Image 1 (cartoon, rainbow, N blue to C red):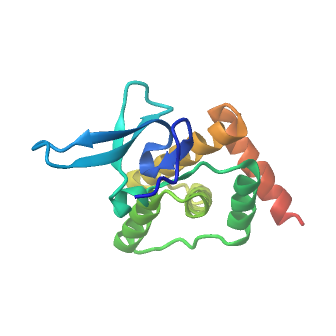
Image 2 (cartoon, rainbow, N blue to C red):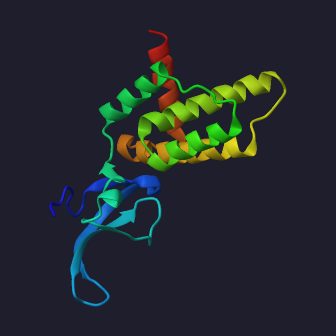
Image 3 (cartoon, rainbow, N blue to C red):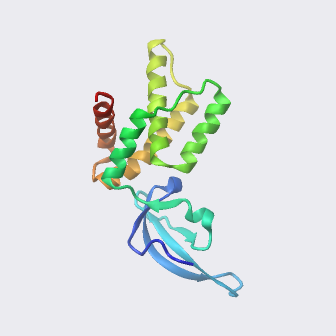
Length: 175
């Protein structure tokens, strides 16, 4: 059971956002017959919360990854500008697709989702209409996930992340 991360490392854990590995701790089972080693994560945005991730659970470990660097963030933003997500008119298909993107919490699809919903919102506004509540909720979830990690990695306040993304999108599409 090899450790990929060390105490003090910052990781992204699923939809919990950026976490610091507070400890790597062996914990005995309830019957005390076995010991499992866990990463003990503390979400940066939620003080007092602890998440235990067993090192012998590949599914849960698969939700962990190192936080993105500035160059990785810039690459994801530029890539999302070049590969837009198409709006799915069928509400059920769209809901399932959006749920999967949120659950996987990967930066490129999250950026594509935000861009797609913003574009749809603009189109509807021209027709005097509004986004559905569920589409608004997906947008808020995706933006929160993106802002959490990008703010941390870029050293920007959360409210400045959107402007950073939009400037790179414009720079990319105007080339």
